[in-house]
Image (cartoon, rainbow, N blue to C red; front, top):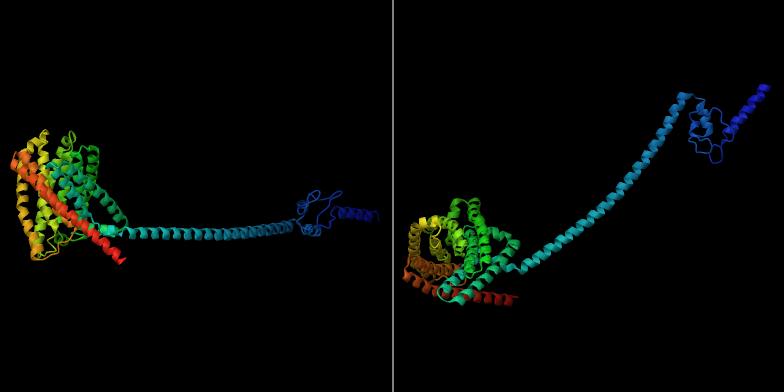
Length: 469
């Protein structure tokens, strides 16, 4: 009887210790026997905490033994971990989806903005390109006008018309600036034409007209005591020459076979010689001590130019004799055949003035003799070129209208007069000096006629565009 009463009391104590509240929490009021040995009940706190397993279930689990209890507890923990992992994965996917949408929208906005900017830039570029479309036809051969104006300026200045020479030099500088800007625009908007001119045997060497024009203006500025500007232009001409004198022949050999290149040889190929000799002219035209410092490099340029003249003359004459001659083929650029000899004469005479340099003094006799030979051959070419012009326009009735190649006549005529006068001074032949000064006025007349033809042509083209518009 006593044992039965004790058991009831013990059960009541246990029931009181594990009483569950309405919220599913365990309230410990007095004691909890065997709590420390119960692995499941240890998850509950000593006072008021959430229990992962209901008390009845905990009692039932305890009755199954320690091994089963550990298995069930591990399953419960795994279930909790799996649920947490699923929640985290779902959240990550939602975040990535939202981030993807945001990045896609941002990328779409960026692409639309880039496309709009590119379209606007292209539209502006095309609009500006149409406005400057006239530069597409301004090829590198137009710098022959600068060459012609610069040398005629020196010719009339040496003949006694000082202010006329200065005015022509200013005109040449203005034309040079305009053509440089036009060339840059042509490179920017009509690059295909620029490359096409470079790889065309008929126009490739016209790029060296830029070198010759720059060097001639440098020599003119030296005569007007503008040494700084003259040195700057000489530097530009030297850099351009160093690039073009190798690049143009290389392009012709790579982009065209040898037979094609030879077939396309014409008078513009002599600009290979003129560009090289023009550096020596500009270098020796500088005042002391610059001309003395550059005397030996000028001599080397002169030597290279003379050798190139022989090579180019052979190729060009072979082309003329190997093809049927037409009026269109016999263009004014063949006057550079004579102009190359004239600038070689001027270069040789200016180098002879630097006899204070030991090497120049040593080679002066050879230099003087070679210069005289070149002058004689150039003089012999003048009647031949005049006859070719008569045959072209009077016999074949080829139209006499403006073309940039006409400046290729003005330059040799002016250079021939200057070279003759300078050679006469170097050799003491006064008749050559007088002949050279007289020929300067012929060069001025040819320059004026060509310039007037250019102005009239530009006016007619503008009126025709206005009438069409």
